[in-house]
Length: 203
Ligand SMILES: N[C@@H](CCC(=O)N[C@@H](CS)C(=O)NCC(=O)O)C(=O)O
Image (cartoon, rainbow, N blue to C red):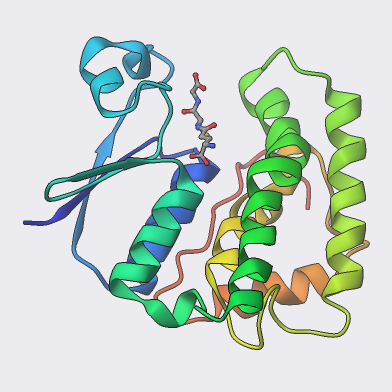
């Protein structure tokens, strides 16, 4: 049976999982959840994820929420080369998964929520967090091609979506050439699904 990915087409968290399923060349079905209409707060969806958030993956008897948890599950089960098992290497990947859930969501992710969806969040704080993160990424990527290893891992997949979508939130990537090269390197991987910026974004 095909895996099912419950997602919203504009959700960067969902995009992480969708691009990874594509990288792994797994067969999957997309199920759109209408966040604008509140479908994620309905009884049916809350049974899948009591937190009321996309993405959710259903793989036969497994129902799993949280984008980074899903990436770990998929890597362990279908693509172990994307998640090293050596103690330190796995911890390095985990560090970036935490950054994806923390700084990436609170910086470029939040700025985009304000600009695209009118979320009532502190835009100035989100901008400042986004640029702090981009500065750290720029320095980190000055001496390496990928975030956690000498090859791409789920860390890159998790951090990519909202960083590449940063211009949607009014966060320019112009001053971050290493970050832009890293984005291009990931987008050049076979079967990688690049994000699509909204027509109003200013790169
Ligand atoms: N930690 C979660 C966050 C997921 C998340 O924030 N999803 C958003 C869409 S991008 C959502 O479903 N928001 C609806 C809500 O929180 O009410 C993950 O990594 O999957």
